[in-house]
Length: 272
Image (cartoon, rainbow, N blue to C red):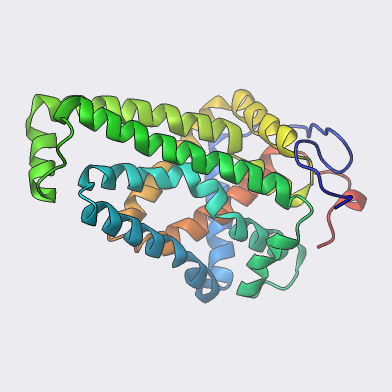
């Protein structure tokens, strides 16, 4: 346990240099992410099936627990936990970049990363944000419709789309959801790829993400919008599209990280 560290990296507090990017860099990152996906799509679809399966389980739970009003928050909540959920995909892109073995089981090699404690801490933080979002969404619903859950999905959709209470729910729910997404974007947009590549610790990973957003506000907000739209599109057909959307976004996030953060000297790079 002598090498155990969380808040700072193995070599103390390190602040990687952040570069400016443009909107064109976002589309190039997506293009490269798609190329990584198609390099071995059967492997990545297998990994990607985790996300629609989890989505279906959560949706079934919400429906069976008289919590239909949480289906949409669950769908949009993928954007909050997505950065952590795609950790294995960042590892695959890292391996592709270095010409290493990219069989699907190598995604599990993340468990050998020296930065695993830091990754776990930020992952727990994101899960807490996700649960807080669900609690907030339920509170907004209760404020407009009371404690009684919707009688059915059809009734809920009709009430939301045709009543004043529904309009308030839509406006306030999306406005507050945007704030949650903005916090996650600012603190973790490139935190996990950075930790996989360089064991810099929680403080530096979050700080670097924040500086990346501050230095590139328009491209980063556009990136957040792209991610949210693609996740919603992937969630609509019973979450099935997430089997493709999540891997591509995961790989693209790795390439976005490469564009935003100056690389460290090759001699200091993690050999794993």
